[in-house]
Image 1 (cartoon, rainbow, N blue to C red):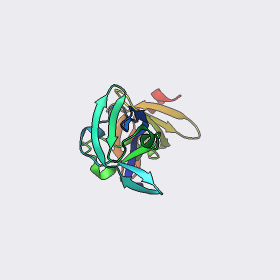
Image 2 (image 1 turned 90 degrees about the vertical axis):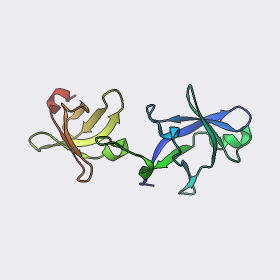
Image 3 (image 1 turned 60 degrees about the horizontal axis):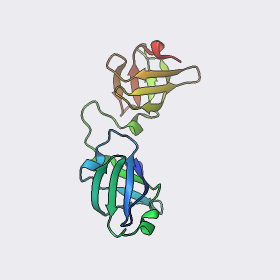
Length: 166
C-alpha cells in the first residue's frame, strides 16, 4: 500500500438510500473533484470502489456507491478509510505529498543534521515540524526558510532554523 495514500474516510450514512458522508483529511484537497479511482482496504488488499454519484456538501462529500442501497448496508462503511494511488495525483513543480516528506532528514545551511520531519501542519503556509533528541523546530515552509527538498535523497535543507526552535 506504499503506492497509495489515505485521503479521508466515510463518516456516516446519510439518508435512507445508502449515501455516505465522506470527509477528506486535507480540507484543501480536490481529489474527489475528478475521476480518480477510489479504493478501500479489503483483506489486506485494496478494492476499487464503484461510485454511482459524488456531490460536494457543506461537511465534505456525499458519495453513493453502487450496490449500497440502504442505510443498513451503508453502515458497513462507517469510519472506513479511502485511498487513492499516488500515480493518479498530478503534482506541480514544488508540490509534495505530506506522506513523502515525513521521515526526511533535515540539514541547516552548514549541512549539519538538525533532525527529521515528524509532522506537517497544513495552512496558508504549511509548517514543518522537525524533531531531534536535542530540539524541536516548527518552521514555515516558505522560500525564506526552505532551501530545497530532495525526495530522492531523503533530504530537506532549511534556513533560519534557530528562529523557529521551541
